[in-house]
View 1 (cartoon, one colour):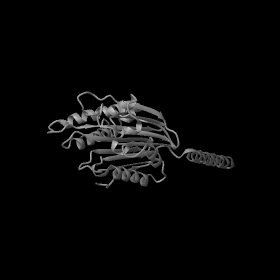
View 2 (cartoon, rainbow, N blue to C red):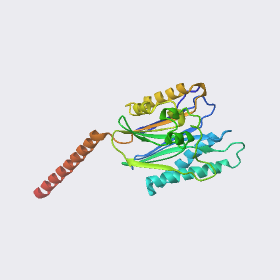
View 3 (tube, rainbow, N blue to C red):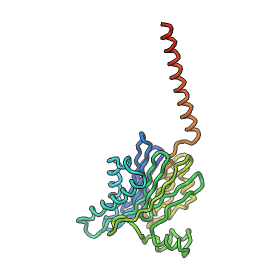
View 4 (spheres, rainbow, N blue to C red):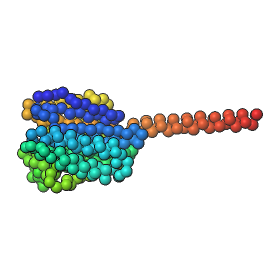
Length: 286
């Protein structure tokens, strides 16, 4: 059971993954930030397909996302349309990677979050999840594209049974299949005090919503993420799945930050006004 964590961090975001009880790592994460335009792109993919295809698939999703980001496509399109393009391009990338592959078929889930100023957009295919919290309150989570989730919606099983139900791993949607994926979207206004969790099923099967919410809003994001991954690996045991997790608090620091920005702006205006008064005095005196 491997508890070593691959770790990433950008401003106000941390991400990591661990192999758990598996021989190979099929989960991938990507965290990108443009400070000038205050834009974040967070992507998590969980690959599958056998004979190395899972690793190939999740890496393909990340490569497609990184390519669209570097091309600046996110500047040209509304958030939901950019994320739709990301999912469809990732799907096409998996088809390209299938060529010449012996014995495996690259498939993957994806969950992605795009933050542009105070606008948040997300998209997902499969059973990797996005949770949204306002403080301690759950605002919502994505619904898995799995047979178990369908049974939950029909009232056949409870939320508590979802993680351990035999149909949980039977996905109804994914990237890399014969047909273009049907992508599910959401959007919201970003507010101070909000936190976001993106995770693979290896995490949410082991950690409750309350645990994820509590950990995601800890002051020390690095330590919280490492604790969450360690818990998921420990609870998964020798046969546990790969685990991948992203914690994000992209909003700036609430009223304190807003007050500080306004104060600095007022001081700058005052300083500029003072210089103009002195200049006028000097010109009149000369």
